Length: 193
Image 1: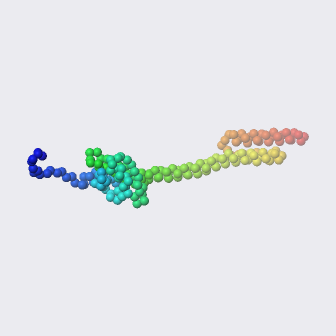
Image 2 (image 1 turned 135 degrees about the vertical axis):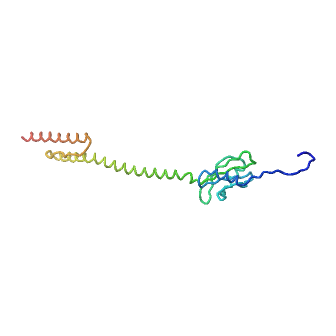
């Protein structure tokens, strides 16, 4: 007004609290989280879940000073994550958003369990496949070694046993051993005449 004039009335604009509450309700990051607004004195102006604000005193101290940041706290044994930032154009108000840590780590825990399960499965499958493959190689080699031992004991008459293998090298080994047996047997028979 003017100097020396009298006040004839006051015009005020009042907004319902529900407007701020609606804004806070739309800020949630996860289904179990909540958000709220505090002023520079730390008074809660709008909130969804009043219980989730318990235990945030240290974090609120930073938010009241207009800082932007992140913090952790524990509420009823559950680890909570909180982000806070000042609201521009206000008299020191800040927005705080709290979310249970489990909302962010639940999927990573599931994936970790899945990978561990897959690792165990493929390790067992690999061990089974390796034993099967090694048996297919070891059995023919063992048969050839057994025949060599009998040859070292003087048995050049018994034939080298047939082997079941899909590798050419093992069949060549068996054939070479049989040729050696036949040659040595022929030499021994020639010497006996």
